[in-house]
Image (cartoon, rainbow, N blue to C red):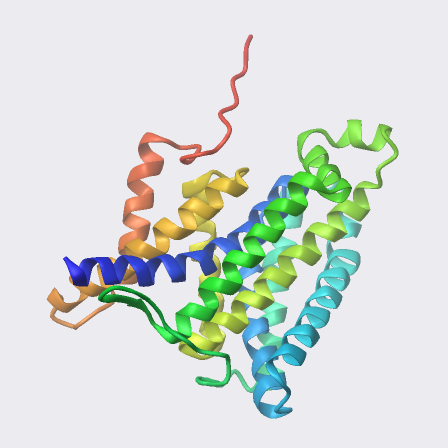
Amino acid sequence: MTFFLQLVISGFALGMVYALITVGFVLILKCSNVFNIAQGHFVMIGGYVGYTFLVTFNLPVWASLLLSIVVAILMGLLIERLTLRPLVGQPLLAVVMMTLALATILEGVATLIWGGEYKTYHGVLPTFTLRFGELSIPPEMTIGLMVSVVAVVILVLFFRYTKLGLAMRATAEDEQVVQSAGIRVTTVYALSWVIASVVGVIAGILLGGISGVMVEMNSVGLKTLAVALLGGMDSIGGAIVAGIALGVLENVAAGYLDPLLPAGGGLANVFPFIVIIVVLIFRPHGLFGLVEIERI
């Protein structure tokens, strides 16, 4: 039982990082109806940027984090202004293909600048262990859990209690009404991409401290999509709950199922998606998604 609870606690810490990434994905989807396929690539870039500031330039953690956030803000603004804004009003497929092209470009940039090589900065981020009796969260995951919880809480409070957050929620409900109220929708779009970029970069730094940085880290985008589908594509609260669930499922599968396989692993990355497929068969709109009812 102790082993199971240990897996659950460690999975919870990892799941909060997934939830943080997914909040950025859901935010863009709610505000502009765009599937951001490049969300996982924001995470990859964040990991490499964190490595550059923490290891290459040997800057303090606080300075590296601030500079990484600045890079993320600039990246989000440039992406929205140069690639997405010209496509406003165009078919949805064109916008989705643009995010796919953006993902390829970001992967190419990572390969060009950092060689696409595996980078690590274990022990650079602050580490300490949270203990609950016989249970504990691994030191590398503890800082990820704390930062993710703080970031998610800040985002939730921002959406609920600030004017910009209200404007973003209103844009998600009815874009024409928002425009008639004098709110610039393009500003809301830009802000959503900036937030998605920032949370992606922060998550990349956290995941880089846990498992290192590599180009393949962009595959977390698939998990982000799975989390969004499970929680409900238009639900920020659902993204948080589903992110935690995915992290726990992945960790439990790694602890119990992977050792049973002849090859010694691999099922942990697949098992959560199997569960998600089952859930979506019986609840296609996700656990917390809004069900649209059309009356004739």
